[in-house]
Structure formats: structure tokens, C-alpha cells
Length: 252
Image 1 (cartoon, rainbow, N blue to C red):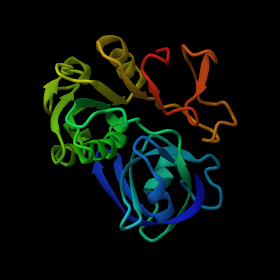
Image 2 (cartoon, one colour):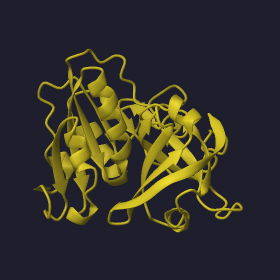
Image 3 (spheres, rainbow, N blue to C red):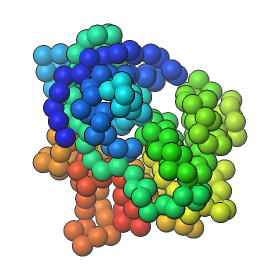
Image 4 (cartoon, rainbow, N blue to C red):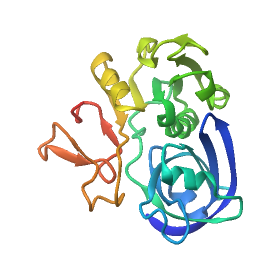
């Protein structure tokens, strides 16, 4: 974990209100793991005051860059969307615990299940898994065709199944309607809580869930992001104990 000023390499609108942000931060890129996140001071001079947690979608350790995807949903992300190339962003990271993949044997088949802005960390994960010789299938859910992003990028690494709620692209309905676990050893999922709840209770195999919660400090001090668990402690802090948890540990 390091606090650093990172230079914006580029920022591009890739779907409805969804931006791709690439920053130059070699130390952070070298340390980052799939599933971890950055805590970004979106504006200048401490406005807005609170940082925003944004998952890491990709890294390039040769360039020393990290790529994030985020959706404009409030003041903080709206301010971030207005930041320009070559401006400096104050970033704390990488934070949290990433997706565990060392236990997966080479040649195994896993599935990735993502919804909306929960999809970006799964792209980073897909690249890591394929590099280890693990087969991936991606199930990605969006509200409509206007919201779809990174489908072509995922296709470079795995077979991709798309669902949209209005049926304007891919299968009509929820992504949980089309998930198949046949021949699969585990799953990794990230997205809205209703989707993760369905995944946890619907799929017959154990997997890993990346939770999305509002955060204050991002390092486990303020307790703003606690979630109930089946563990002895009975709760966990999403920012520092997660955001990735075994599906059997969290209560959804």
C-alpha cells in the first residue's frame, strides 16, 4: 500500500456514463493483484473530501500503468470524469485482498460472473488465469446495449456470454439466468448485491465473491463497510478483509 500522485495517461468514455481511466504509477502497477482496488482523491484541494474506491481493471507492469473503469453515479465520480490527461491524481493503493487463484490447477475450467461496474476486476483476473493455463468463461450482465463495455476485450481471453435486462444485446434477462457450472471447478463473481446473492445460493459449487460497499477510509479504520459473516468474528470489513471473500463466509 502506498500513497502516491499518479499522472493521468488518458480517460475515455467506453459506455453510457462509464469511463476508462489509465494512470501512470509504476510502484502501484508492480504491486497490484486482480481483485484489489485503488482509493482515489477524485478532485483537487480535498474536494470532495472522501476518496472513492475503484477496482483495478488492468495493469501494464512494463509501462507502469493501471487501468480502472468507473461509472458516474454521484459528485465524486462526476468530478473524476472531468479530470484531464496529464493531471495528477492522489491515489492510495493497491488496497484489499485479491482473488485467490493459486489453488486452481492448470487446465481447469472456471467461470467469471460480473454485473455492471463489477465487471472490471474480472478482466484483470481473466488475463491472470489464462496466463496460468486456466480456461475461463465469462458471464457478463448489463441493463441494456448502451451499457455494454469490454465484451470484445474479454473475447481475447475466454468465451463470453452477455445478458441485458431489456434484451437489447445478448440474452434478455439477468446474467444469473444463463450461468452454467458444468465442468467448472469454481467461480469468481463481482457485481451488485442482488446478483451476488443469487450466485451464492443458486450455484452448486463454492466460489469467491467480491463485494461492493460504500467506504470511508478504505483501510479498515472507520468500519463504514462491515458485512455479516459466518466466521467466528461474525463480521468483516470489506475494504481490508475483502473485498473478495469465499462465498460460504459471507451472509447475503
